[in-house]
Amino acid sequence: MPLPFLTADRGFDSDEDVALPFDDDHDQWRRPYRPGPWRVGAAALALLVASFMLLATVIIAFAGAGGAALLCLVLAGLVLAAALRLLRMGTWVSRHGVRRVGFLRTSTLPWARARTVRTVQQPVRWLGLPRTVQGQALVLVPREKGEQLVLLTDHSADFLSRVEAFDRAADTVEAWSAEYADDAAR
Image (tube, rainbow, N blue to C red):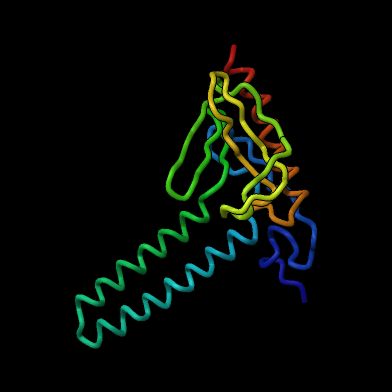
């Protein structure tokens, strides 16, 4: 018996990674790809830990140790905030520019300051760890002298073992750059 309300986005049994639905509002910041399974899995694990910490907070509070319960509540809140920030990480685009959201820092570059966005072969970090492997990276080259900004890599938590998704996301960001960087440069 099919349950259509569970598969409104796509079928659970389909192995293909379909593109995101088209939305015409280009003023809103959007991530042009779905978060990858490694990122979602890590965030789910952190949310699970936070739920156990909140359960421990309730138990400690009923035991009468208010200070320890408050400390446990604060730590659970930090784990919860870290999980939500982990899900927010990535590259976001809009008509105004490209935004690279990291765990602790966010940088935004207007399209007018972008010379080109291209895919290059270079050593990339594996799952954001210090270990590097040879892979593809989508880099933004600024107009002024400066360091290239790495937007996406095929070995990140979003694209590890998802080559088609990386290619589609890189093409989408390059298309946004081609559309808005030329308009902003004029």
